[in-house]
Image 1: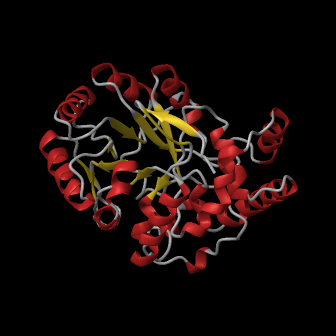
Image 2 (image 1 turned 120 degrees about the horizontal axis):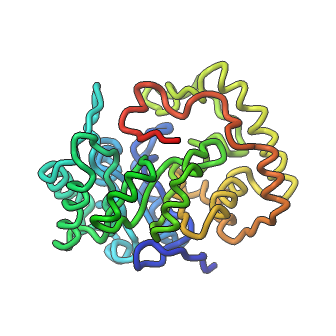
Image 3 (image 1 turned 45 degrees about the vertical axis):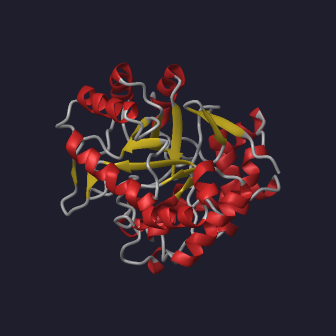
Length: 330
C-alpha cells in the first residue's frame, strides 16, 4: 500500500506521522522492546515522519530511537525526524529559549538520536523572556550550520508565528488539535496556510479517548498525564463519555473505527495538516491508517460536527500545573 504524502518544508512525508511521547510512558506503561518493535512496524508500514522531544522520559524516547537507528541505518536515512527543547521540568516548570541552552540541548539530543542533524527542531514552549525575534535568529544559525533542517514552534498564537516567520521562516507549528480541542481554528490554521507552514496537530485522538474502547481513569498510573487532566476527572469524564459513545456509533455506521474517523476529520481540515498520533504498539496503527485514504463528504463532515460540535468537551484541556508555557489567544 502506497501511503498518501503531504509536504513539510521541501520534503514529502506520509500524511499521518508518529508521536513518540508514548515511548516514555506518559499514557500508560511502556516497554522498550515493544517500542523497538513499534518502530519496526512504522518502517514496514511506511510512516516516515517521527516526532519526539528531549523531555520525553528525560531522554528515554530519543535514546530508544537512536538505538533503533543504530541497528537500522537505512531507517535513519528514510525518517524525517523532529525533536524539541525549551522546557525545563519542574516543579516548578520553567522555560529557556536562550542560544546557549538550545545548542546544548540539541547536542545532547543528537547524541541520543545517533544523528548529526535533525530535519526539524521545535521550541517546545516559548520563553517569554526571550524576544521571539532573537529566538528566530538563533534557529537561523542552527539551520545555516546544518544542525537542523528547519525549525518550529509549539503551543503558540498566530501573532507569535507571524513575528517569528518574518525573521527565519518557520517550517512547522505544533499545537494540540482534535475533535475536542479546536482552538487552532481561531487563527493558527489560517496563519499557517497563508505563510506556507505545515501545521502538526498533536493528540489528534484526544489523548486516547477517541477510540472504540472506554478508558478507565481509575486505573491510570500516577505519572500518566491524564491522571490530573480536567477532562479525565469526575464529573467531566462522565459528562464527556456520552458524546464519545455517540461518535463511536456514528463511525461504526460508516464502517470505521472511532480513531479512524477522528483522524480522517483532522486530515480534512486542510492539506497543510500532518497529525502525529502516538501509540505504544504497532497494532494500534491499524485503527487510523485507513484515514489517509478516506475522503469525507460534506454531508459526513456536517454530521460529525452535529455529533461533536466545537466546544462540546467538559473541562479544560490542561490543569493549572500543565498549563504554563501555553500561549492562549482569542
